[in-house]
Length: 106
Image (cartoon, rainbow, N blue to C red; front, side, top):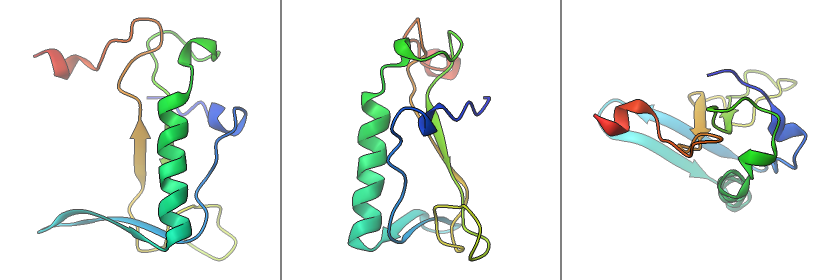
């Protein structure tokens, strides 16, 4: 799925504070952070849920999404801790049709 980065134009709130999202082989996904980090993740999720995909210039059938990347150095633009795994957060409903990805229908 292409990364159109429209979120930068339409008020993407971003991650503030400290937030880790990582995968533990035995325990699944771990999400942890300080209060500011957890609240900013909630803001990102609410923003994504509220985006009016029909008013974007992304192509029909695409889904709004963001990539949260780990910070690899002090001047890196990543939003997650260096202990994190890159994480994609995505709307399931496609622009235009509202259809979910095909594997939901099999």
